Amino acid sequence: MRASSFLRITISIVAIAAVVGILVVGVRVDRIARIGAGYKAKILCSETFVAKRDSARIAAIEFENIDPTMAKIGTSLDETRKTVRASAFGLGRAQAVYRDGYGCTLANAGRIAPLPALPPMAASDPWPEAPPVSGRALAWIDYAAVDYALSRAMDDATAGHRALIVVVDGKVIDERYAVGFDQDTPMLGWSMSKSILATLIGAAQHNGLLKVTEPAPVSDWSDGDIRTRITWNNLLQMQSGLRFDEDYENPISDVNRMLFERADTGKFAAEKPSYVRFGSLWSYSSGTTNLLSRTLRETLEANAQTIHGFARDALFDPVGATSFVMEPDASGTPIGSSFMYATPRDWARIGQLYLQDGVWNGKRILPEGWVRYATEPAAASDNQYGAHLWLNGDGAAERERFFTGLPEDAYFMAGHDGQYTIIIPSKDLVIVRMGITRNADPINVVRPVVEDIYQAVGMAPSDAS
Image (cartoon, rainbow, N blue to C red; front, side, top):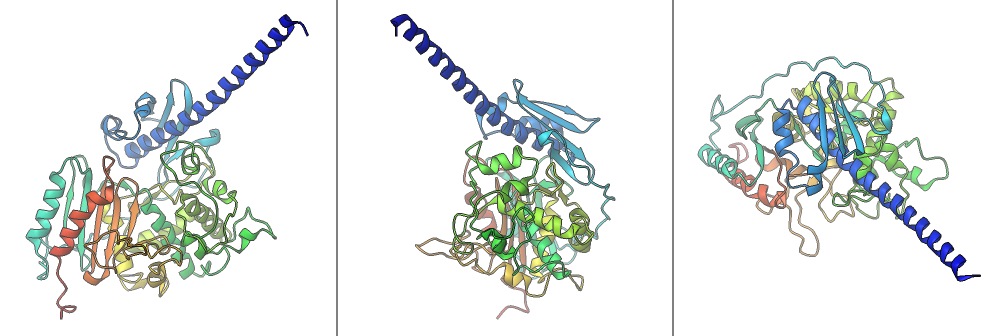
């Protein structure tokens, strides 16, 4: 072969490789941009139309301390159509659409499934209160100490607290809100949503629609597939054995692709392979919860019920938690892992329901024994996780409990950026903290105020020695 021909061929190969490389990089950049744009469109849409906050203030503060590239993603909000579009210089286009009763949905795959109109939520009965809010004081509480703990926490501008609420003996005894928020502001629970989805499964069992000890009827799994033996309980305890990458730092991890790229979050999780035997390994997974959500939806639909309607009738309306909004993916399934909104008082109502063993105003909402089941440590979880609830137990290898100043009977819902609903049965106490903490480990920021509140609440006279 002549040298000139060889040179031409070599140049051609290099050029083709360069083009392929550019295309591969371009696809990756577009995917990363699409996930970032999806995040920004979804949050701006929900905070504007669900939380009803000022959109300019949301855009100014809601996306700080995430990633510098977030500033490169532009947004366009349409107040009339109730939509938000986002992209990074034309790459990674995303659109979020608001619908009454359902909140905001990312139009992944270009469209969203139609859903039936939801009637407005009924007005709920107000919480009973005790000073310094109103009503009759509870003698075993140091109100001054509670008040000081909340005031000191909210005065710390670096902490990111947006709401703190304390409930004792079923009564709101104190609460605080940051500027721009109040007791009527729905707030995103992030992974606290997982605990609500599990509570709905409990309500479904109470209504005879499923049994958590039985295999979960995942429609994507066929006979002969070992995954068909995975039970509702395996999924609730995060011991399914399904592979899932829960890495929020990686923009193209499973969890980010599922939440901000895929139209059917439950199907995405159902397609994950089994890599260890179910029940043998504990692995926290948002995909697991969305698989549960999709399977619960299909189970309810097989019984002529919608999941949103069931949630209202079987849980939210009976306990008066009427601000809850379960935002669906583009297929119509609630994103149970991450996207539920409610006021801090309504998050506290669910905590109070657990304190009351699943009973509200004399009516049983959850099966007898459900709370005991949900707070039993999953075998492989090192004493830290039940059925979609975090536990405050000490672990092996000197792993300390999450809240060292709280007793081991405490358990809690927890969400990204520091959302907590903490339930302490020994003091009949529920504490809710909502906020955004990104400059530190949120639990380290929240722990001091929670433990101060715990110390300020004594034992009720009937429980005191």
